[in-house]
Image 1 (cartoon, rainbow, N blue to C red):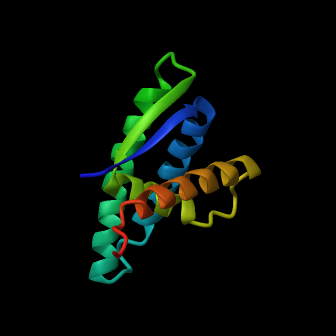
Image 2 (image 1 turned 90 degrees about the vertical axis):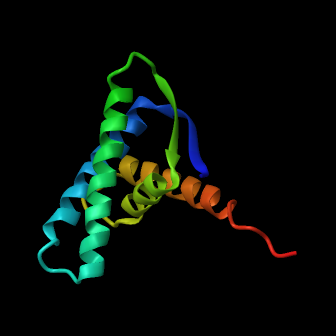
Length: 118
């Protein structure tokens, strides 16, 4: 399976991603009772995977390093991308910048896995 890689992430960026994932996980859980079965199952996956990523980021943040290299499985990268696409009104300019940066990076890496026609 392919992986999505990030290099030289700053601690502050990790903290933003972790916070955004927490908020995304929370908003997904709010709609569980009101959605169709497909939306319900997708939300359960998003909640579970975002919690796993949140814990992974927490471990990194608690380390002594100032910059980080991370790799994510495709399903994890997709959840991060969905979180970054989510238009949360209360995001600061810096949070918007971080979301845009990682959304674009994931998009580029995922699209590089698509085989080209010959």
